[in-house]
Each structure stands twice: as C-alpha cells, then as structure tokens.
Image (cartoon, rainbow, N blue to C red; front, side, top):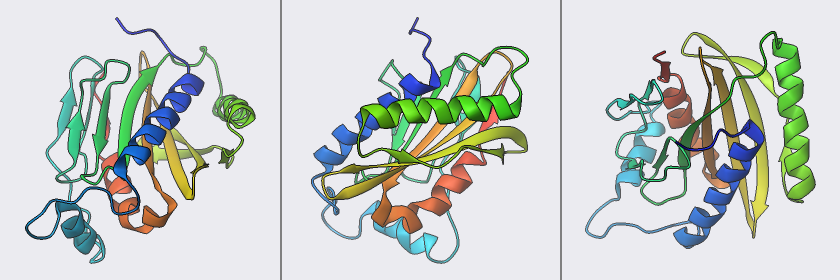
Length: 202
C-alpha cells in the first residue's frame, strides 16, 4: 500500500515529475513521429475549431474514479507513487491524478482554501521560481471542488500547473494539469473537457 500523502507533497511530486519530463522532451518541439503530421498536431488543429476530442474512459477501480483523457494521449499507470499519469505525445502536457486524505471533519470550504494557500506558500518557500494564485471554489462534473493555479520557471520556460481538489467520501482526489505557458491556448480546451469528465465512483 502506498503511503498517505498530503496535498503539499503531491504538488511537489507533480513539480518534480514535470521537471524531469520537460527536460527529457528536448525543447519546445519535443519528439515528433516521422512520416506525416503528429497526433498532437492533429489535436491542435481540432482545438482551433473549438472541439476538444477526448479518448476512451479510463477506469480506476482501486481508487474509485473514472476520467476521459485527451484523445491519443499516452497512458502511464506503472508509477505506484501516483494513481495515473497521462501525457501528450510530445511530452509537453500532462494530467496527473492522485489521492490524499480528506481534510479533518468539519473543515469549511473557506478553511480548506486557506489550507491550500498555506501549503502553496510552503512550496514557494522551497522553490524560488514558484508562484500561485489564491485557491477558489469550482465545480467538477457537477461536484463541489477547489482549484489552485500555480506556475514555476524551468530554464527559459514557464510551467503552468492547475490542481483541482475533488472531495470524495473517503479520500481527496487531485487532478493536476501541467503544460508550458506557450502551449496554454492549445491544451486548455482539452484540460477543461477532461476535468469535467472526471467522475467519483465511491
């Protein structure tokens, strides 16, 4: 059984994963397939028409949730430190999903938002290039949730990280969307559509 983690540790984990993946991608273009347009370039063209096609539903029976990732994205569920990770084929955009303990019983939405902001301040104290906006209450697939937006610099790149916190009955779900700032307009429609497909099954 994997250790129970706090949202702060999961955020730091996501940042570490992205640093590694962004470095491995080899720059803005990443690794492209030969012999015609890449799958990602086809998705970009579709996004510009206002459509954000999603792939098949991914079902996690152990953690009791489902989600539809962007079409043709890679699936990686081998890392046992997180529930699942999806990545664009050029390894420039990611969706990471994991769980953490629920906040103490009786915690109000305002108190939980303060908790998230306090934890982001702790991250900022450890990572000089990390900055964030105050967390806000949102809705994920008609379910009350919270959103924390953050960014940090990796070399010449600014990495954006939006984390949705979705309370379930027995655990707190975290959906972490990550991409370079330069690709925000490309991947935002897919992030939004995928997040709104997220379903708690407990």
